[in-house]
Amino acid sequence: MGFYLLSLSQLLSSILFLCHFQTTISSSNDSSPSHSCAHDQSLSLLQFKASFSINSSASGYCQHPKTESWKEGTDCCLWDGVTCELKTGVVTELNLACSLLYGTLHPNSTLFSLRHLRKLDLSDNHFMSSHISPQFGQFSNLTYLNLSLSVFAGQVPSEFSLLSKLVSLDLSENNNPSLEPISFDKLAQNLTQLRELRLSGVDMSLVAPDSLMNLSSSLSSLKLYSC
Image 1: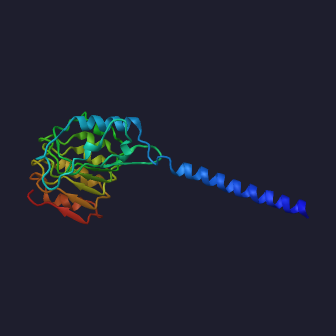
Image 2 (image 1 turned 90 degrees about the vertical axis):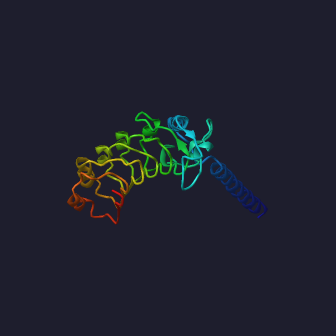
């Protein structure tokens, strides 16, 4: 009987040891970083940051210089305005609204190398009448794009029609960009998932009014004032 009790005691001790060991391993895993920014993504963001200055007059409705938290050698997934996919470390959302960014957004900007973006908000900055780049059409995964209140100019490129997953598009309140009939027709034809479309302040003088009837049937919000 004593031998049986001793064996049972040893068995219970072994079970308790294993439970403690597994708990320790689990705690160790839980304490590991939940983010790991891909190096190329971090580099692209830092180069994008370096191409602009921070100007207190560049944002009017709110002011939050998010890129000031972007530091080399730190995890870009933890930077202000940046959201990553946890498994791969690629940037999927970039919210730089009201970030006091001042400068020209060039077509060769490293912003356009962030191909996995699903949401992009550059609203309320000052891009010095930069033309809206056709490179935006490379963001094939975008569901949300906001370029409002950021002093963009020039023609809205037909490449926007490639953003077939867009649910929300806001180009309003810029420096009188224009939307040509061919580009608008392509938008209407291909952006079939649009629910919000804001084009206030966009020059649409050449677009036939009945072309609006070709917009997505899922559209629930359309703003066209001062067009």
